[in-house]
Length: 198
Image 1 (cartoon, rainbow, N blue to C red):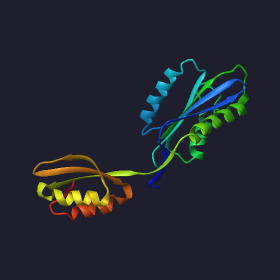
Image 2 (tube, rainbow, N blue to C red):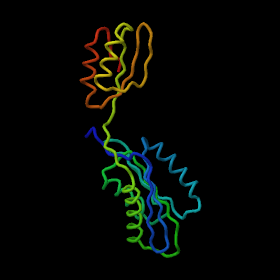
Image 3 (cartoon, helix red, strand yellow):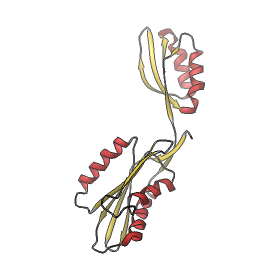
Image 4 (cartoon, rainbow, N blue to C red):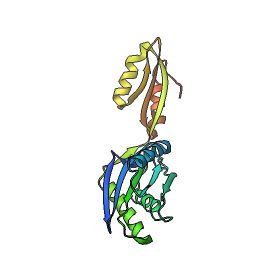
């Protein structure tokens, strides 16, 4: 499993037209299947007048959590081609929705597959693709007197502080690249009085 993954910087849109039918596509960054399903519901409400609201999503750096829907189109003609584009671009943590407004002319199975594939590709091509590093967290405690050493380490390693509690015994949660976590835990443990909780 790679600690790197590709996802989208922000939502982007695309469009594909074929024989009077209009396919409007949206490529949306998401962090979970739950979030993807909520967004799908919102788009189904927003485009209530469309003939079909088809979609596919891929979640996780190992890219094993995915789902797609033809939403009434013939089986395999919408969701699968959309998911195919997510795979072609090697993306994850992404939801692609394609809204179809029927133009009155049937496209046939191959025509539908092409239309949904091209609409999905257009939304992705209009997006900014990010290569991200999977993140991990370290929670640790340290004496208040050790604050200076902890802050020096955080600055030197360019770490992101997620949470902090200051008292006689302080607690801090930091975020770092997943493959740096083991080495950082050692550096933190080497500081006087620190204790790794997680």
